[in-house]
Figure (cartoon, rainbow, N blue to C red):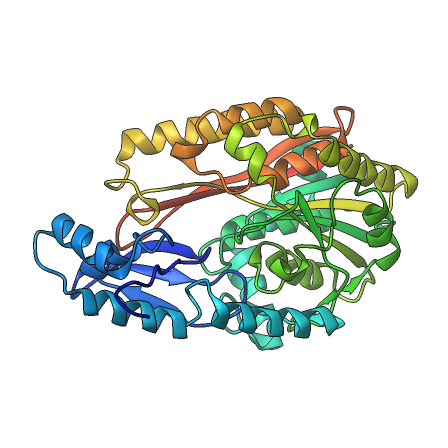
Length: 418
């Protein structure tokens, strides 16, 4: 890098977190799995990085950032930061592309997707993980109540919306979701279609993964026949083009961990699907208006109907993301939290009515404010079930509040019965 270089920050997750020394810092994290490194930037450097857009030179960035912070930032500081981020694989360019290509090749050749978040987002050792799920998730959620009478809803469970927040913070939500599943899932079910949020950008509407998912409790095998059947219904796009996004994506990994624990030795296979639908979310357009999306979802529906009683649909999906960590000026007070819950529950009312179009329209109406990251997978689940797919019930709703800055991630457990 030099003064005339135009650094370009690649697509990474950026969050603002509290820091004792600087007050708040910007953290960059790779959701694609090319690097495990994190970049932590104090406010003065954050004003530089937000200008790494590939259009401005390092010299121009130094001038603009200096004006923003009210003090002089030498251009060589910008160059040095760009060099460090480039070496850390946070900038787009030859170094990153070469590293990504190698990681993609390794992942493509692997038969099994590793348990990427084991030992971090949840226990990596089987005994500790089993204890945590039993004692911190199921027991604390009073999950036994969910196993009798399907929470007052007649019939067997056909589908489930579960959180994808990390299990440390979402223990009760996971407990409510998966205790209900264990108590009401038909004994004939042997296939799980898993829809998850892709936290990394996707080029295509959906991404299949033709791999087993490993967990500390053993691997969940892929239903290759079902995956290939869906791939054949993907008209106008490559359903494996974004398979690499599965490498570090937690929204499905967490569901597989809980399924393995709740179903014990019962054999089952999975069909992992990441739902992107980025253009539709950005525009607010109904995804069914895209022929590619409609054809793929018709394929999922056909798969469910072709195996009566055998296919269960799960969406790993959180709801709102609000507060300083997500770009809001301050934490929500009680009145704002109440309004947020009312908005979330109004969205969930569309979901429990199996109104896919209504759910989509309600969420996109304030998507920039609520930042509902589970929009695409929940819509996909509703579309897969269809309007005659039974009755839905909210089993749990929660706003998980960050102890440091008051930021909130809301999430719910929703069962569908019929």
